[in-house]
Length: 239
Ligand code: NAP
Image (cartoon, rainbow, N blue to C red; front, side, top):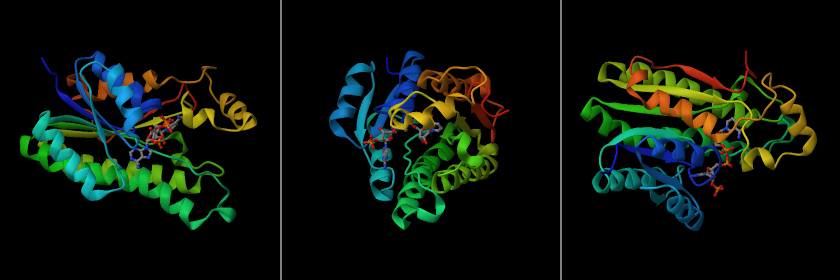
């Protein structure tokens, strides 16, 4: 039998894929949302019971259509995980306007778009869990003015939605991954990669499943009285 529905964005690889695997292992039917149709189909084949949905989180109308299709085809959304994200790192004085706009659009507006379309369904049912992926960088990181601003915005969005939705039994929490082993971090220059590793007290890079297990907790009944929180998952990187 199909389990409760969890919509995960940016799910075809990296942290989103790890979150999706953990949720599927725990009995969720995962709706995998991402940009690349063929990569998404491969992820769908490897995660039992999952469904692939090609959608760009920056496209307000397309997100609305995807959420409607998911609700009507697969069932009520129990969990929304806003994970899709990108980086375009550059020092502030060299950052192009397009680098600012693209990162804020995907990392912040993308989360608003998904919440804006899922929340009315959750409100109607007085039930739901939203988990937004921010970043340890939200507190500021050299070369990441666009990314840090968007990820700080995610915290404000999370806390506001948590306040608005608490009385409706809908929890909204944010996770700040530290340094996680994904294609996003593997594309960094070796010196930058080593500098990040040196900041981790646990002396190992995180795995997508390290993040996925915390998502699973926040989605579970055990976390029913937890809302508006920001949970660091970084092996002690932020203390
Ligand atoms: P990743 O490996 O680059 O995966 C991100 C996924 O999101 C990709 O599949 C990407 O698709 C997809 N995506 C990008 N733009 C999208 C859009 N407009 N609509 C739908 N999907 C889109 O990144 P990751 O390292 O797993 O990061 C996942 C999340 O964790 C991000 O929000 C990131 O900021 C956050 N995070 C990561 C780390 C880390 O150490 N890795 C640390 C802190 C926070 P394409 O490949 O087709 O572009």
